[in-house]
Length: 296
Image (tube, rainbow, N blue to C red; front, top):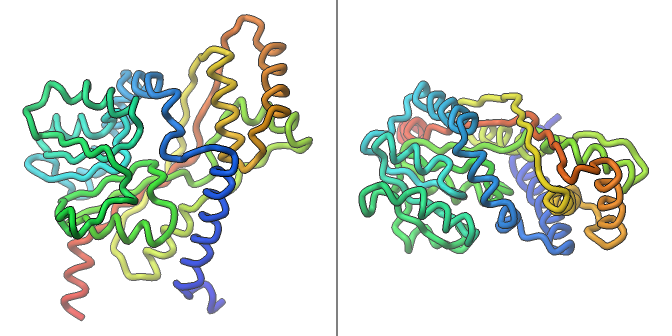
């Protein structure tokens, strides 16, 4: 039971799991920071669709309900993609620094922010991991640091770096269980010979370490999903990427198995995919943390 309250043990467990996951992805030729490159256009269209904007608005309304103000605020959006949140942040009057590394997403981001005044949304095309927060002048420089489903957050050390940039609030979201993907469920038995089972993700480490380290925060778990139709080629690319995320071999054998299945199951050439799962959102109140520290 004492291990439950041992922060160092939880930090090590999270780091070990993260290192193993990242190592296997790299072995399979997958760069987490570039895994969206091939579907940047589709992702952008979905994000700025009516349904996508509704989802974004729900999250922003939740943040406002917790006391976050966007008007005249400074926001660091880590893993900004094509501006899914950077754009609505700016629309509500915020000054946004958008960090993104994917070239196709950066191109779409720059298109999406072209309507704003110069300097309202600043794009930083560099990995957050490589940025020196002190040298950059980002230490406690932003009213809100926002990291939504970002691979940047993968262990406690990365969380601490994100938190250092925040003056008032820090928002982090990630899956609670591995994302549900209907195609993965279909091909899993073909590739592994076993039924598919969802597994918990790192959200548990994040929440528990915030608790152990005395942070003030609000958390929310939601169930979300969406349906899309893609070509067989796109479905094959997605399936191979997901194999890497699930630590399975991204090799010719599995590619052939999936390609054959897609051809037989989808003679029209189009594949309907359902995605979703349980997602965790946490808003950390740095101003409360600073007040607590001063009182001590």
